[in-house]
Length: 455
Image 1: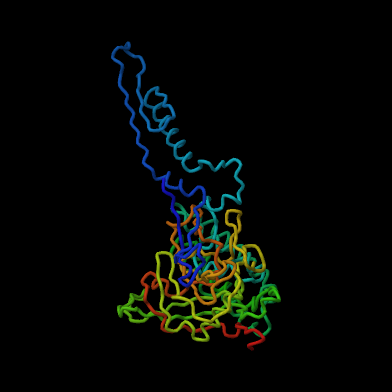
Image 2: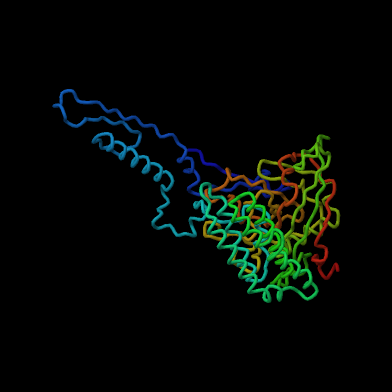
């Protein structure tokens, strides 16, 4: 059986002799060649006829022919049904688990195989989880995020559980008001108080969410939940005005972003055609894409990218597109810093440098690549311990090309530093030769820090 070998476009400049092509391929994990077993056709024929030579009233004598080597014992229709069910179950189970030895498989080594692997599936969720905020706020946030999973249940939804979770969150918010607002800097107290009141009593707040759940309307719950989580995110951002760890001394020479920033791209079709916008405003010659940069988890990578944007390095740059990524064209000769690979593992408080994560061992990043619209730096042409000084890509995650856990086969291999939050519908319309007409840092200038030598 041919195995599926995914690849990602990482750079188009000169590369070492061992990988001169424009794609960096990864060897599929041992079980990937067996994933199609679930969809293989299982042909089965059961022939059952009465033996006319047998005395009347005797049981049927059956001949069975199965592609599976497991025997089928026939003792009437019920026995046949039980045997067929057992054979099917055995066949499917053996395809899914062959060579994996599940009784001896440690949970950490089954991350990619498990369909229950919980990683953020949207940029907004990944960005919320990445904020280093007050522990009380994080507990409240996690309780509400669970409702998103409960809403996906296709049949009868557990509205009682949802209501209980929100009431518990509301009680925590009321009882921990002093702790929540105490984590907000003095100069932001007024705004913090306004957000807190909106969270507890305002439209789209916790009380409003409880009312929506009582109506048993999934769509209304989803809309109100999004509003509530948005307010929590804003409050958390006030609590986390900067990064909560010290950068290694040798990296203080690089630009850095000590929080969040927003970059806005204005893109244009290279062939003069138009874009279709989600707002339904008709064909547009120009389209807007916004990227939220996360300096909390990748301060050096986000800082280098922000500096390039401020310097106008991406204005007029052409794009190259593949099925998996949208890549900025070529290196910007001499622009940008060669930043070490920078990845913050989930559950840790600072990034790792010059090292990738072993997803099979249970290491997952705070900013996962397995999100449609994830923004990351390509690898350096000379060493994969470093990112490219200027070449970035927007990842077009597709679950069909991922492992059973929904994780990209490239997960944990690149410095992800943000997500596309506006204009995601434009990404699929971009083609090779399209142009970034302009790039601007529209928010977060106060979080941008230049190295001392340039300050």
